[in-house]
Amino acid sequence: MYASELNTPKSELDIRIAKLRDHLRNSDIDAALILQRVDLLYFSGTFQQGSLYLPADGDPILMINKSTGRARAESAIERILHLESPKKVPALLKANGYPLPRKLGLELDVLPTNMYFNYQRLFPDADLVDLSQPIRLIRAIKSSYEIDIMRRAAELSDQLAGHVPNILREGLSELELAGKVEAEARRLGHQGVVRMRLWGSEMFYGHLMSGSTAAVPSYLASPTGGTGTGPAIAQGPGFKAIQRHEPVLVDYVFAYNGYLSDHTRIFSLGPLSPEFIDAHAAMLEVQQMVKRLATPGIASGTLYEQALAKAGELGYADHFMGAAGRERIRFVGHGIGLEVDEYPFLAAGQDLPLQEGMTIALEPKLIFPGKGVVGIENTHVVTQDGLEQLGCFPEEIMVI
Image (cartoon, rainbow, N blue to C red; front, top):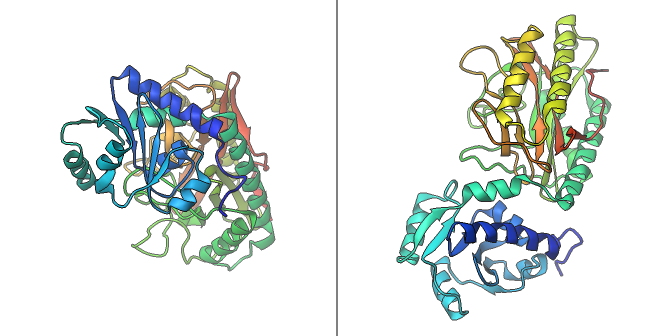
């Protein structure tokens, strides 16, 4: 009834589970209990409500309380059981021959405190330890299966950007244009949800802003903010009317079969001033430099420092990734996959070495308060020769 060619193959799940199991054995952890929904999707192939119990030795067991039927159709995990309540996890494990763990790994970076206390009560003899870092590092290196899906997402990002000139008109509000772009995204198969791991972060498709409002900062860890529709949202498109001769930033995440492509292009109705044209060209230079340097082994933070230095050399130190001062963010790119904020972060102070197969959204941008934003963003794969760009939509400012 629910089976689909989009289901994650068993061979793919087996590789992912084997990597986590290796960490459990090497760290003397008896088992992992996967609760975070995107991690559950990654290791089991289903987003249905429940948890995956993975012993260091033995078969995984997927316990679902809603919807068990869909989970059985979507997941290649062999042992899938209905769970009446999370409180019955220990009883269900014992009834199926699983000894209760002495050391149990959980995703403590996102697990709510009340749930942590609940699992302490459910497993009173177990030491609860954090598995969030190893899980995120496993997820950071993508398989060819994952990269193929992300290539498709990037193709759809290109198609979506190609639709913008057909609908961009003077006098449209940012929200009106956003609605038209988002309708096309849905027509192309956008899943409608852009997932983030960081507590308190959320995003609806991305950012579409014009002129001065694109340079309005927000709470989000992003170089751009936007007015949004008011304090309850406080980011993204707002009610401002789009005018001629101002940059229109379309920074949208295309989400396809779980995986993401982060993609920014600049449009304008009529030519922009030389200030914007030169600034945008500078960000393309920064992008090309980082793509060349981002080979396996280089520390992720080094790439940010190199990008910052290059922006300064080109004369844009006061505008790179935010206006000078407290509103500036200190990164130039981020890992991306099932979530928009995955490892690695090309950020100040980060020393995670790049590895082949990591996927990175590289986004050098310049923010000019009261005027606008220019820059670029593309999703890439780390290869032996640097970053391979996914998607090929023209990167120059598109004048309509």
